[in-house]
Each structure stands twice: as structure tokens, then as C-alpha cells.
Length: 497
Image (cartoon, rainbow, N blue to C red):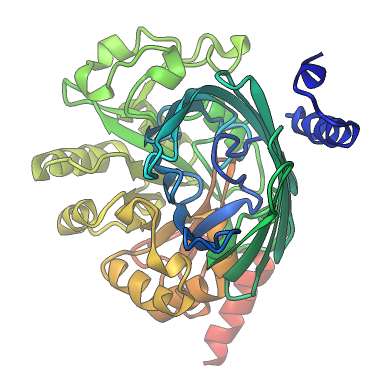
């Protein structure tokens, strides 16, 4: 009925039905954005669209997408908007500018670079001589494997827009269909991430238009890529994210039963009453639905909350663990390494000293405890007061936006400077296609690195020059993660030398 009232031709009806049906499958796409995320990736583009009537009204556009943690700027003759969000803590994003909207992400259960559901208000041609607005819209998107798509509805015009995209290793193809036009885009990418794209816009009642774009882009990894590789070590991320509520007794118990893990990662926050607790997010929203900050609550108040029902009713008895309880668990499992991530950018020097002193008192096996931090300041504070290994989460030092993500020759120099004082580093796993460059940094600095993602496993690489150290990390005095056969190989090499 809707298609009929819009006056679609038979061909347009068929095209729209095909595209819309393809869009009604569960993944995220920038449905309200001028073009969908046909490459499931980070990218930076400069586009040029010549005027079809030679009237010198050419249009230039600039856009950028940072990936898992959205920071998107889009600017052209139709739009100037900033998209941002923090799905790590709250599964939402928002945008301001000519497009004003709020949307929902789900980075913990499904790897999604943009949004699943959004609604907002959008101006149109705000920077042109005849400003007008598109008004309110709602959109929904999906992504699965190589396919992505979305469907948006604009209430003022009562018009839907559908998107469908296919992402390949070095190419991307999309189609956008609305009652006014059909737009198809082809993008090609070299192995060094330089990309070029071309779009053809076919208005139903105007001359076809062509736009071209040039930029830098990086493809996202397939979900099972890291699992299929051989790694020097595997660490259980937050105990588990998928099989039990993270950072709880149930999560750590699951991890301890898995033979592939030689270590477990846990997150540390500080409470209002100067206690240290094991929790990832700085606020309780994701776990309890209440926006209380950890730093504004006491340990007693936090322990009143059920920390498992948000994941599944069967974990309703889970409570937040403090550092004492974590140490008891560590002491009962002396064969396991524990990576404690300090989830704060702002601890004072007294906070660091208090934490390290308490850790020394509580943990019986000091050689099995490692720390890592979110920025250089915390790294230097920790290193000044402990001889234990301290690592750096490299992604957080510049809001996960690195020039070297795109300009490959810059990577060794940029990462090398950031890691000058670190004993190891962690980096988000969508940089897997930079493995040769990242491993060369690790080899040069003789420190290992760990890939992390929103999944159960952190994957570690150990430079050959330090593989005789447990975990490849200086400062760990005993224990081993290598297989018996590999250990024997190292001993025979050592004896031979």
C-alpha cells in the first residue's frame, strides 16, 4: 500500500522490495548517514561530486570513522555533524550538527562498528542557499559476516531508504535505494590501505551524478580470525565475557577450567571508601541499569547489588569481588598468571602506593601478578613504585585514533615512543592486519603484546629474543607458559650456547 501511494514504477517497487527485504535481517549500518558502512572498518575519506549541469556547484566532503569507538566527522554541502559514543561503558552513541540523533550499539555480544537502532532529527542542505530540513527519522541496521544493511524512515516525507553492502578483503560494494534515487558505490583498497571509490547516483527524474573519493581505510577482522592463528599465549579476558558475567567468581571459575589459558585478566577500580574492587565499567549502568559511579559508592553499597542477573538469571547470586577476595582466588591457583588492569586515568600517587602495598600484602605469588594501565601517566606512576611488570593499553593513549592506523610507515616510530617504559602492551584486535608492523615494534623493544577484543581471549605474541623469560616479560621470576617440548628446546639451546 505504501509503495503504491508513492507512485513507484514496477521496476522501482521490485528494487525497493529486494533491498528492503535484505535490510530486514539482524546488523549495523549508517542508515541515516549519506552512505552506509560498506567497508566494515576504520576509514578517512575526501570525496568530490561534480555538478551534473556544469554550473560549478561541485561538492566536496570529508568523513572519518574510527571503528569500535565511534568518532565520526561528516562534512559536505548537505551535512556537518559529529558522531560520538562510548559503547565500552554505555551502549549508546549520539550526534550533533545537521544530524542530531541517539542510537544503540551492542559491542559486547555482536561486533558492531556503528549502530543497531537510532532516531533523530536531520537538517538538509544547511550550508546551501536554500536551507531546509528533513525532519525526524528512525533507522535500524545490521551486519553479519561480509554483509551489512539498514533501513531508515523519514517521517516528514514519509519515505523509506534502504541500504545493502558487501565487504570483501580489498573491495566493497553498496546500494542505497529511496523513492528519489538509486545509488551504487564501488570501493577498491590496496594492500597498504590506500583506497579509491566511485559512486553513481541515479535520480528517477534527473541526470545521473557521479562522485569520486580517495582516502585511507582499514578492514575489520572476521570474528574467528584470531582463533584460527597460533599464539605464544592466551589470556582469559575478564575471566569470560560470553559464558558468565565478567569479573565475577563464575567468570573466573569458567576460565580456570579452560586448559588453553595460562593467565586471567581482571579489571580494578577504586571505591569512595578507598577499597579496590574487581569491575570493568566505571558506572553500574550496564550491570544494574542504574547510573551510579563506582567512585561515588562504598564497597558495602556495591555489594548490595546483584552482579549476575544482567547476564542471565542463573547468575543472580554473583556479587562484586574486592581485592582481598581476588587475592584469595589467585593464591589458590598459583599456576595461573593474573593481569590486573587499572581502569583509571586519574589515580593519585598515594592511590598507586596504597594499591601496590596492599597487593604485596595479599598476593602470595608475586611473580604471577602483572599490572597494566590506560595511559602514560599511570604507567610511570606504577613503574616508580614497583619492580613488578607494568604494561600499557596502547589503544587508550589517544582515544584509539592513531595516524599510523592508516599511514603504515609511521607505526613503528609512533608506537615505539609510547611504549618506551612499558614491559608489555595490549592493543585492540582490529589491528590484526598490522601484525607485521606491530610485531616488529615488539621485537625491537623486546617486549610482548596482547591483542584484546570484546571476546573471551586475549592473544599474545612473544618476541623470540625474550622467549626464555616466562611470558617473555622481564621481572617475572618463575613459572612457564611454554609446552614441555618447547621448554626442553630452550634448555638445549641454552646448554649448547
